[in-house]
Length: 165
Image (cartoon, rainbow, N blue to C red; front, side, top):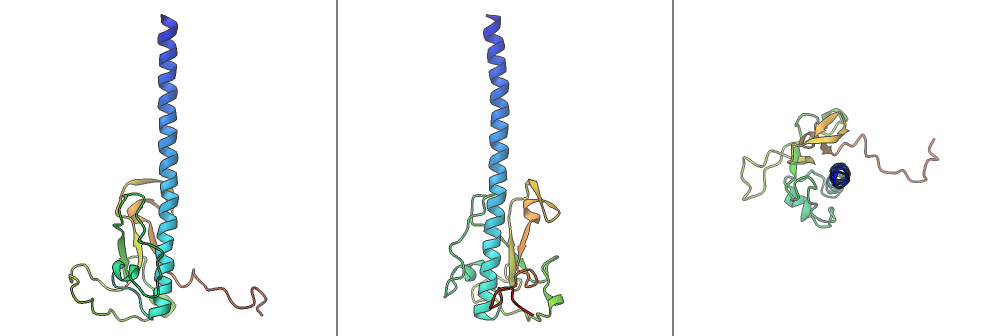
C-alpha cells in the first residue's frame, strides 16, 4: 500500500513538471509568433509607404490597401484577437525625423473618431501587458514590444548584389 502511495506521489510530481514545461514552451512559441506577426505589419507599412507615398492612418486602411500590402489581418497570439495597438509617428521610440523624413499629419478619413486617429501609423504593438519570458529589445512586457518601421534597418537590396564600390 505504501509503495502505491509513493508511486502516485512521484507520478503527480512528474505530471506537474511536465505541465509546467509544456506551458513554458507554448508561451515561448507564442512569443516567436508575436515577433513574426509584428514584423509582418512592419513590412506592410513599408510597402504601403512605398506605394502610396505616405503612412497609413488606420490599421483597417493597411488591411484594405490596393494593391495588397498585408497578406491577412494577423491575430495577436497573446490576446487571440486582431486587436493590435497602432504605434503612431512621434510616440516614444517611433520618430523618423532623424532620418530626414518630414511628414505632415494628414486629416483622418471621414467617419473616424478623432480620439482614435492620432496621425500616421508607423508600427504596432500587442494589447497584452503580460510579462514575457524573452527580453525583446530590452523590454519584458508584450505591450512594450513595439514593431516599428525604421528605414535605417530596412534597406532594400541593391541591384547587382554585394558587388558595390
